[in-house]
Length: 91
Image (tube, rainbow, N blue to C red):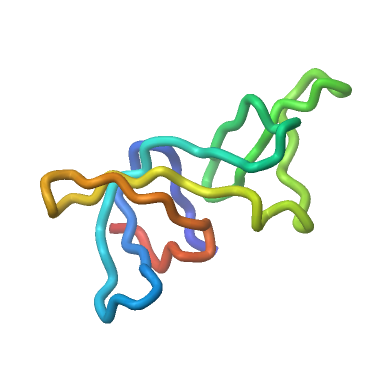
């Protein structure tokens, strides 16, 4: 498992592009409305559970709703949104 956090540089794939890109992780998001507050710790996304009043890992069935905002190190710092599965290594 690749370990990464916010502000880490990572290499990631983009569908339809032959080369991997390199960028800095800026933020973590989810399409789940209940995941209002999130954090990333060593490659594992967490959300703040209202019921438990603490951060808990995102359930495997909801991992496809989680994505990262990445600032590309080239192209004048263009911002892209990628899924966790798109990360291939630490930058």
